[in-house]
Image (tube, rainbow, N blue to C red):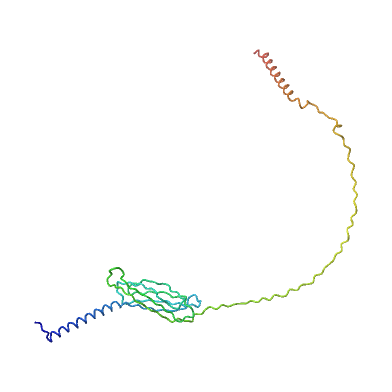
Length: 243
C-alpha cells in the first residue's frame, strides 16, 4: 500500500515548484521576445525654405531589437497642428532599419508638433526564419522655433503734382468781305454755214469697172489663160513637128 511519507511529500512539492517556475519562465521569455521590437521617433524643426513664415519638421524613425526575418510597415495615425501636411508615409523598412518623412505647412503661430505612428512587423516572406508578427506604436513630439518671420507687405504711395492748366483768352478777328457784283454776259450765236442736201450733191465715179463685174472679170481671165495655152501648144507643133 502506497504511503505518503514526509520525504515523498517534499519531493512532490519540489517537482511542482520547478514545473511552475519553468512555465512562468517560458511565458516571460515569449513575452519578452514578442515585445522586444522597439521604435523611436525624433523630429528636427526648422523654418520653411520659402521664407514665408511657415515651419516644418524632418521626422526620423529608428527600430531596434527586431528579428532578422521581419519587415515593418509604418503608417501615420495622427499629427498636429491641424493644417499641416505629412509626406513620405506609409513606408516599408527592413529589420532594425530607419526611415524619414516630413511635416510641412505648419503655421507660424504653432509652438509644438506631434506625430503618432503605427508600426506593423510581419515576416518578410511566409515561413521566414527568425520572424514573427507584432504591432507597436511610436509617438514623436518636438518644440517649434516659432521665430519664422512672416514677410511684410510694403505699400508705396507715389503722389504726382500736376500743374494747373491756364487758358488764354482767344481773340476773334472779323473780316469784312465786300459784296460780289455779277455783271450780265451777253452771248451771240455764230451763223451756221449753209448746208446742201445730199440729193443735190453730184455723184463722182472713178475709172474702172463697176464693183459688181467681179464674176465677169474672172471668166475673162480664164478665157485669156486658155487662149495663151492654146497658142503655146500650136507654136510647139510648128517648131518641133510634134503632135
